Image (cartoon, rainbow, N blue to C red; front, side, top):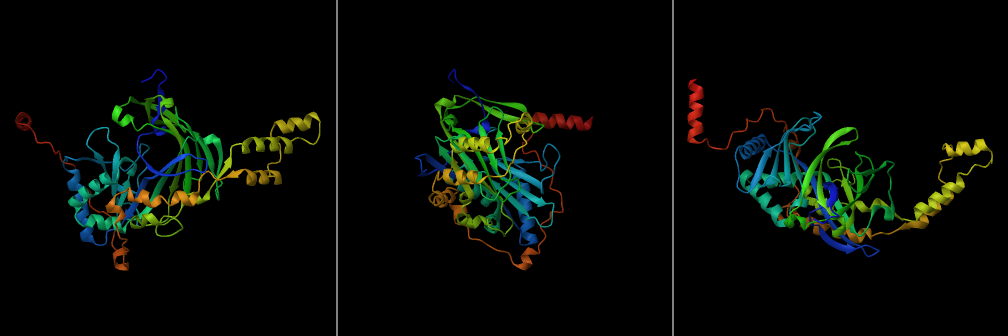
Amino acid sequence: MSKKSNWLNRKNVELNISNEICRSSHGHRMTMRADGITSVSRFHSEEEKEGVLQTLERILGRKWKQYRIERKSTQNKAGKLHPYKYGLSVYRKGDDSPMLLHINWGPRHVKTGGIRFEFRPQHMDAEAMDHMLGWLSKRFGAIFCRLLARSWVTRIDVALDVYGCKLNDYVWDLKGISTFKDHINFKGLPGLNLGGQRSALRFNLYEKVYAGVLNSLGFNQRSEVVLKDGKARQEQFVEINQEEFDGFLRIEARIIPGRRSGAWSVMLAELAELKNPFGRIVVYEGKLKSVLVNDFIESSRPKSNSAKAWARHAMGDVDSRMSRRVKRALVTHETELFNKNEVWAYWSSCVAALGTIIAELEPVNATKKEMAVSQFVESKPNRKRNPRRLTRREQARLKRKRRG
């Protein structure tokens, strides 16, 4: 590494490839992809449910040549329970492999689907996604693809990257929201959240550097415990010289639709029909900041030249209403960073990048009888067996212990 290398928060380092799309209105190169997809499905009969549960435990009960399967706890470090009782994660072989898929089952609530799929498509191309889903389909049988076809999306993250663009180059807004928050990761780059945690549509904007070449060259990484929002959390850091890599601004739409209702509702099999989330984002020229600062200074000046009037002004006792001049400045300095319809026309290619198995799903709706099937799992899963066969020496030692 160069002498200028420093440690940058792993969240601000991009190692994965996105789909090339059009250029911005100002000539920026842009890419886009589905960054995360969570969908929930239902069992349409007790026989289906029992068969799937047995297969899940069978997959957990042994080692596999192509993937690493791990049982996952369904409560966080603070002890908060997940909506599902049981879970497993699928990884590529290797201890440092990122998670590819998380499966949960055993819902805790009546109105929750029987099985949940959390995909991490940023770590796979179309071929790798098809391979993983095909591998699972061989273990589960035809029911696996039927469960995917029945599933409705409960969250989807769409990542739009604008290269050569920084957060402070523009001023940002999202129509219809009142919640916003600036944020910066420890040893990270600037970021901004638009919309509340529970909003159906929320945007996260933050700067990153693209360093995909490090996947082949290798890189130094370390973890540190940092204090965030009053809680100790472990963060990952990468040693990197930012000047050697392209920087970009990620505009990430986080969509959390209601189950089969609302403007954002979509089934996994109809993912290409997702509504354009970028239609509500508003971008203003960067010089709007200085215009508004000058307007604030002029409009908030005390009418009296007395010391007390200026003291109140210094303490923030000013009128906070938006003046006509401010409203006029917003309209005047609004800009089109990118053509929203042109950008969203590439969404179908992002769906195609998820592989043919997902792209070729046909949506399946449940009948009233099928909707009445209980999704609860009454029995507790069997304990995980040790897949490793004991050596003769270990077997002899175990026999001696039993005799003793």
